[in-house]
Picture 1 (cartoon, rainbow, N blue to C red):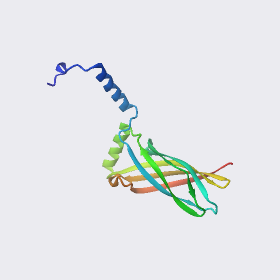
Picture 2 (cartoon, one colour):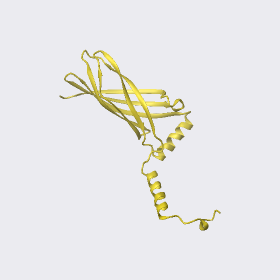
Picture 3 (spheres, helix red, strand yellow):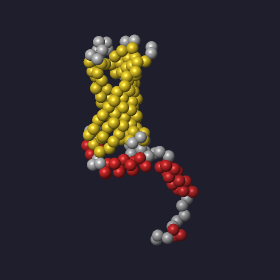
Picture 4 (cartoon, one colour):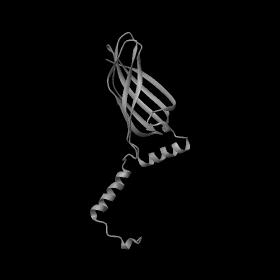
Length: 163
């Protein structure tokens, strides 16, 4: 029967468990978790082989941090290229941001804007260059698990590092 006065009493354990779950939902527990592998081609224009050290990348949605990715060191041959891969983890989506993302998906035909900012240190002989990348992407979520971008705009910045 629907009357709260006739419901069995809640134990203290059940009460505190419910309160704990409520606080966990407010404290940033992710409403969605997704793992994927991203790849990029790295080109070395110099006459000397280079190494791309560990790279770190943050993923955001409309200014909200939602995940990260990292690359492992890789050797890039002189005047050559190699493929770099990263395990991407999108696992920092609070309920409010999840609701905004869902609204975007419904209003924009399953297109979701995300931004990626990252950096990697490239070492070529005695020279070190800090490479920064910022990408503004529109992801076609209807193609998941395949990652497909409707729009991809990236900016790159390079800074020499003193030895």
